Amino acid sequence: MKTSALILFLIFLSSQTFSQLVEIDGIPRDTSFTPYSAWMKIKKDFPDAEIVKPHLPENVKATCDLVYASLLETKYGKRDLHLDLFQPKSEGKYPALILIFGGGWRSGSKAAQGPMAQQIAAKGYVTATVEYRLSPEALYPAAVHDIKAAIRYLRANAEKYNIDTDRIAISGSSAGGQLAALVGMTANVEKFDGYSANMNQPVSIQAIIDMDGILDFTDPNESAKDDDPNKRSAGAYWFGATYKEAPEKWVEASPLIYAGKTTPPILFINSALPRFHAGRDQVIEKLDEYGIYTEVQTIPDTPHPFWLFHPWFDQTVNYMVTFLDKQFK
Figure 1: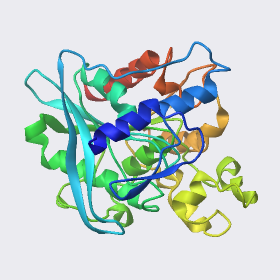
Figure 2 (figure 1 turned 120 degrees about the horizontal axis):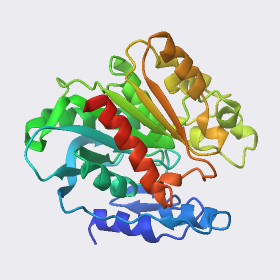
Figure 3 (figure 1 turned 60 degrees about the horizontal axis):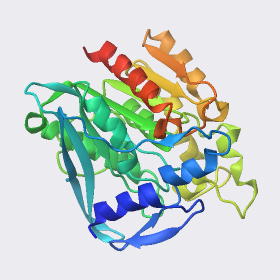
């Protein structure tokens, strides 16, 4: 079975709800977070929730597992990183949206963002779901470097993929939302650049969509999770240290500290759970000082991973497309 097919199988059929490390192509992967495992956790409180399945619209073409970067010297040898691309079939230049999956910086797959990418592409956008290295494979800031490499790849191949490089947005859910905000706010921060092909290409982003991604790691909901040594937090796994052990890393990865006059417009789409809004209001206050547009859409009575399920999926896509159209069209 090909790697992509195996990962897709794990994403949609895995019934594991606990951390499970397996090796795929010699790389350790945590398969615990999938749409199915998330559904298992919420179905008691949300019995009408249904997992959103991929469906390629007729006016969209897909190109899967494009290699956007080849890392030659990693702990696990040569490592290709992939993205799935969805394009309108009609000719012309289109704005682009890069979608970053969530899973606590430890689990998950780009396949989980596929249904959303497919439907947004049908509205006149080139969309790309991006693989990045998770904490069992590489600690922070490897994921940030990977996503910026994907942006450079898309810019370098803009003519091929009909992308208007003046209109590129990034979105993410949960951990992916934190990463999308961090990447979108740090175009000129060298420590997050990494090394890849196409280093001559800029990594600037013109709009950000954050779905329940925290913006402040120092918030007690995140930084105070490691009081129990037997239950390590997702943040501690990603940073390789708890907040008490290395607070500078937790601060450095907080998008809040980079919010300022060069930050692009941001849409926040939030669940009903306040803990996933950490840092949002402070970011909005900062951006208000510079007249930068922000928008908050809170979907009531929702679980954290609402974007993976009906009846909230279509509403989420509509919020995203309306915001993108306002910025780009």
